[in-house]
Every structure is written in structure tokens, then in C-alpha cells.
Image 1 (cartoon, helix red, strand yellow):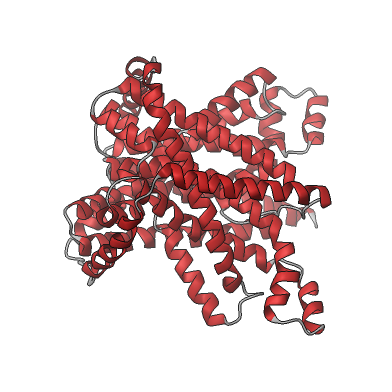
Image 2: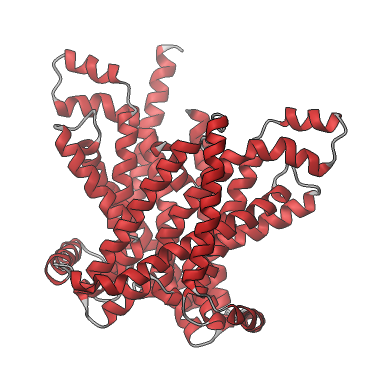
Length: 263
Length: 278
């Protein structure tokens, strides 16, 4: 590359960055006007937030811990059950949704669209929707987590299935193996590690999401947080938030350990 | 592994696949983990004590709800689109603020640019604390602190996004070649000079990519913040659902879907271009 070319590229890069920054600044100003946002409001907001966190929320009420253990365990159970059922269903569906293993392209496109819908409608909306017909409680929480899990896992599983070594598949096919024999002997063994990896990752996401689901009536810790705020029992709320924190971090730690052990 | 995980967290795409199962020994332990998973699943179901009769009756009720959604009612479109714009604005402001904040903290958190390792540790743990609490809970906290409206939404997104951006920014900074830093240091450059002349130019495109991906996540989050009262289109949705106007709710759902999906497409394209250049 000649010196001139280099300089041109450098200039182009600098201009690109400048343009990006100007665009960003313009968008931010537009947004600030639209939301009635200002720097004093920001400072005030963070100040009020910090005051609320350190004065009203602290110290957490440890005597409320006994009442919160139940919802906390429910949160874990819901996330795990949704992950377990979700990964089994998604595992079965993804075989038909991956280009490499799908028996028919129409089936593949249909399943992909289906899972995109499950995935792109936020979990909280699924919960609000399902609460209207299934009532409040753990059932709704588990169901909406299940729906979102299937949506996410079908996509991830299908993408992993598309990346498997096709040589093995071809070899078996050449030997006269049937469709199901090919799936069982060539596809599944290669697919297993990513199946486990994505399922564990899904468990982490579910644990986070389950607190959100609880806020709109799906049971678990989110419900405890929401009702605590409505009743101004802020010390209980902070205890519940700490439990959320513990569960999320513990799940991350555990899944990382299992991942390291198995895969 | 941790890096892969954050990649997937924001990409929602397999960047790197987990390697194949190691050996016969890990297969054996795999069987135990599988058995444990099944046992824990059954235990969870027993503990959850789900009402399966409600599952059946709920399905027919759900079908009725869905039939009430059609045709979608777009008569409130001005209202809904206004709320959608508000959601986008909340997402933009929250992302921009968190980028500014985490840009500075990332240099303190990255092992190769931090003034002291204990500072790095402190900033990192603070970030993971912010990250572990879901944005919706931040929104609830800020609603109590500053009242309803878009402001608590902006604050909640800023806090949540800062938690994850500090982590990924720091990781990108740590990927900068040590030779670059060493070369500048040997010429007698100060800390600030090393960062501006050496680290920043190397990491810039990675940082930009993270910003785009963060915006994708923040937009999805800002659309739902309204459901707990933080303004935006989520409020329209939960309002329509609670007043049993399912046809209006479906229209709002469509708008949310289009917002989230179009940003996902744009950022996917950007990601592919970044990867091609890299």
C-alpha cells in the first residue's frame, strides 16, 4: 500500500468517526427534547436514586428472609423447568429447522418464523398475555419462560446444527443409512456439546427473566419485589433484590463450572 | 469462556462453538449430570405444584383471547406511534449516557490500562453488580425515586447498560497488543498519551461494534419498561391488555415487533460488515 493510499484511508476513517459522532449528538439532543430530559434532571435523578437506594432500601430486612426463600426457590424451579422442557422441545424442532437436517425447506422456513415470533416478543408481554387466560402464579411464569426459551433455543440449536461436519452425514448416507439413522449416528453426537452449552446459557437467561416475569404476575421473586414496592415495604424489597443478585451470580458460577467440566 | 459468553449475550449468535466433548470420562460424568437434570426437573415440578387443570382450561381461554385480537385496532395509531418514538428516545439517551460513563470506567477496569489492579477489580465487581440486577428492577427503583415518566426509564437503561458495557469495553481494551503499549511506554509517553495514541486507535472499531449491539439490547428493553410505568410503548401495551382491548394490544405488539426486529436486522448487517473488515 502506498503512502497516499494509507493517508486516504486514515482520512476516510477519521471522517467516518466524525460523522458518526455528529449523528449521535444530533440524535441525543432530539431525544433529550422529546423526553423532556436535561442534565440537572439527570443529576437530580441519580441523586434521588442513590438516596433511595442508600437511605430507604438500606439496610435490608433480614427477618423477611424466611418469607422470601419460598419465592426465591420458585424462581429457580420455574427457570429450570422451562429450560428443561424448552431444550427438549427446541432440540426436536431444531432438527427440522436446520438447513442441513430438515426434511423439507417449507418446514424449515415455517419453524424459523415460528421461533422468531416466540423470541422477538419480549417475555414480559407473553406473561401479560398469558395471565389473562391462565391466571396469576407459577404456571404463567413457567409457560412464558418456556415460550421464550423455545424461541431462543430453536435458533441457536439450528445454527449449531448447520455448522456440523457434513462429511460424517454424507458417509452414513452413502452407506445406506435411513434418515433417522443419520440423525442418531452422525448428527446428534456432534450436536451434543452445543446442545448442553446453549441449554446452560438459556438457564442463565431464564433466571434473569423470571424476576421480570414475576413483576406482572408470574410468581417468584419478581412478584415479591413488585408487591413490596406497592406496599412501601422497601426493606423487604432490598432483601428480595439481594436474593435476585445471589441467584443470578450463583447460576452463572454453577453453569460455568458445569460447562468447564463437561464440554 | 467468559468472553464467549458475553459475546453470545449480546450477539445472540454463536460466535464460537463449544469444543467437542473431551473424553470417555467426561461422557460418564455427562450421564450423571443428565440424571441429575431429570431428577431436579421432577423435583421442581413437584415443588412448583402447578395446577394442570388450569393449563387445559387456559388453552381454550387463550384461543378466545387470540381470536379477540383480530382484526387489530389501529385507531389509536397517533398515540401509539408517539409512545414508540418516546421509547426510541429513551433507548438512545440511555445508551449514549452509558457509553460516555463506561468509556471512562473501562480504562480503569481493563488490566492493561488500569492505574492499579485493585482499582480494576473494584470497577469490575461494581459493574457486575449493576449488571446482575435486571433493568426492570432498576426502573422500579428509579420510579419510586423520581416518579413516573421517561426519566426513570433513561436512568434505568443507563445503569443497566453501564454494567455490561464496562465489562465488554474492558475486554476489548485488553485485547490490544501489549507491544503497542510497550513501544509507547519506552518512548517515555505518559499514561494519557499511551491511551490516546496507542490503545484507543486499536480498540476503536471493537468499541463501536459493542455500542451498536448495546443499542439493540437497550431498545428491546425500553419497549417493555413502560409495563412497570416508566413511559414509552410498553405502557400502551399493558394499558390495552388490562382494559381488555386485545385488538389494540395486538397493534401495539406489531409496532414493538417491528421496532425490535428492524434494529436486529440493521445490527446483524453491521456486525457482518465489522467481522468482514476484521
